[in-house]
Image (cartoon, rainbow, N blue to C red):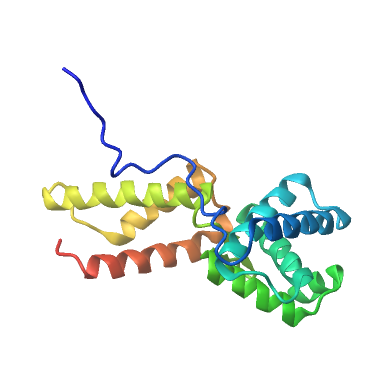
Amino acid sequence: MEIRVSKLNAEPFGKTDIFLWEQASAQQTIQYLKEAYDFFSKQSVKESYKVFALKVIAKYLTKAGFPRDQKALNAATLYVVNRMPASYPNHLSKREFAERLDVSESSLDWYTNSIVEQLGFFILRDRKNFPYYIERDGTTFAVISSVVKVFVEEAIVQGLADIRPFDIRSVVDQILDMLITKLHIIPPVFRRDLSMKIENDLQEELSQAMI
């Protein structure tokens, strides 16, 4: 018997929208990335950060097109990629960062907000209210989402089967213990902010469901 596998609903591994040239030609984008790489090199940026920053820029260009201020976009991209949760503590202000890269603070702020909005970065804040960014299509966010899904689904079925009452606070605490204490995906300083974000999302989602 011949078995055929349907690909109608299959998602290819490594799917990306980097090569969707809707806002600019491929050649323009390639040239921009080369110039951005030169900019990062002059700032003595680590190679891994350069590649990460180039990826962010490539995605941004496909969403928003070419910026009016290329240098400010490059600076804002570096600001974002230098503020991953693992970089904590990182208390360099935007003003100090802008001065260091010789761009205006207002331009840095505008392009940072535009990157976050266009690419949907997830934001966590430390106790001093400094922002830290997580890619929604990156590894860290994928792990967070996966852990949340597993614990929530287990808690829901336990509640439905009368094994254990569904307690959203208990579920969130279990999620945070896994992410922070066991997997070390997120530094402990972000526990409070991440807790509120997860609990708020779950409250909103569960309010629309019948459990």
